Length: 227
Image 1 (spheres, rainbow, N blue to C red):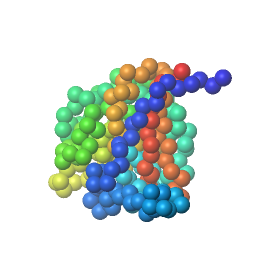
Image 2: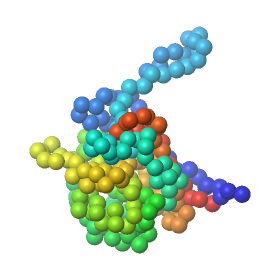
Image 3: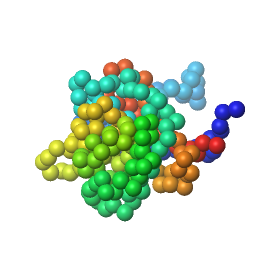
Image 4: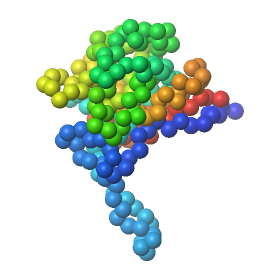
């Protein structure tokens, strides 16, 4: 008999009209009811307007590299029922750099197939003006993480990169990570709940939609303790 998961932990940000952060140039999220049974329609149906990087989502290498893997070609084994290491980084302040020294204590549990999940607590600021002032990953950690075998970095922030209004490259970690064929998950929610789960039994899923030739996809991210 296959092991049964305990309670499922929803790690996804809610998508509500007018309350979803959208990057500059991206369409705002909009769910519009186009027919409703209460009005005599055969069925209730909504139309959706959103970007591939709306809400909780996966970045494929194609997001930054023209020859990078598209979302429909990613290894789903890395994103489905994957073991996870949760790095507790809640002590990091606004726009604080996350260095290898912060992640090294978790390295012994990192290997191929494991997803590294960054817990900064920043998801609590979802919808607030300072949501973009989150901590960020030192781009130099990319090679060290790749050396452990990890190929998925997931975070409870809008980006693992430094985001500011000043001039500069806001994609340094993206390029270092996606450029090696690895995967990023952004805008997770409630990651701190995973800290209470048995480390050896923790599993996460960040399964993208099968959007052919896409650079990214929204996901319903979940975590659980395998029974």
